[in-house]
Length: 421
Image 1 (tube, rainbow, N blue to C red):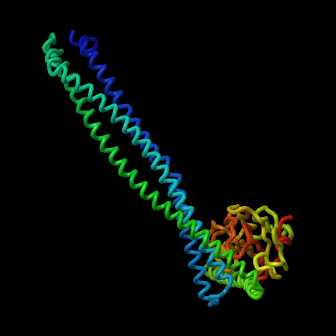
Image 2 (cartoon, one colour; image 1 turned 180 degrees about the vertical axis):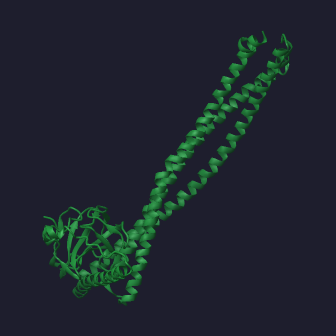
Image 3 (tube, rainbow, N blue to C red; image 1 turned 60 degrees about the vertical axis):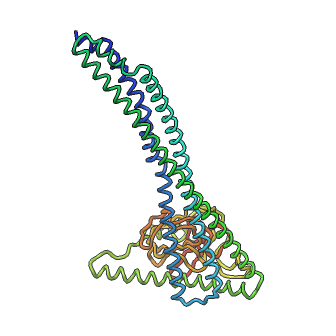
């Protein structure tokens, strides 16, 4: 009979209802915790990875700029070198742009975190109100009936089993009351912590917004200074001619850099052969057989804004020699390797901005200049079509385009003679 009472009787029914109520009370708490863990795991991850990637690009840009300054010091270029001054201005612009990108991502992350915190605080506040309401009802019940109800339940028991069941249920009821109180305290502490975190995020958001404004001012100021400087050069014929001459010297310097790097690579290969290793790879094997007009693929598709050969310089407005093709494209357009090869140089060069030089073997190399960013390192072996960087306007340019060269040794050749028709 006692078994029937536990299973089907009033005490068993009360226990079942209490268990269901307890489960229903705990369910929102568990859902809140699961939701918070999911949001914390899913939401910021993408922005964090983007911030980390931009930080890496900033460090890489700093490395390139320091390498460029070191090269300029070694070359003992005069301080009043016009191209160096233009480059320094361009470098400051690129660095400010990179800082702006990082700050914009960080601000976006903080705004999302603040939105998540506000949502969590609203849910926690609603939970506090529910818990407070439940405790209020429980206190009203206790004040109305006191302990008489509990004693009546015990003394009305027909046997020992019913007494034990009643005591057990009363204990569960008291434990649930304690649970409600602890939950209420926990939620209050949680909302206080969320408010502190929210204030901290808001302070950081304010600081980073100010920093972003400063970087924007710096960016626009640098562009203005560069444009003013270029306007002065154009107005003064002597300065324009001098700048154009420096640009031609910079083109020759690229050829000398290629010769030096190729010689170093040849020495390295010969040393490797003596040590029993492999020699240099003939990256153009198979392409030479196609004929000169099909040796290289186009690094990108776009209109040619300036051809190879003599031209009126678009910046200095003087007649000069142009050692490659200028292919117009929007900023950030992917630049691809024109043929398989090994990256000889990756960095910043006077007048050329951010540059990639690829050695293809057989004394051939290609040059990719004015890029906004690069994606390969020196020594990297690339295939035809490998993305090596992105279109920009670094160095001495009038807009976004890729400056592309084909060289045999140090001599610049017309790329149209070697690119696929």
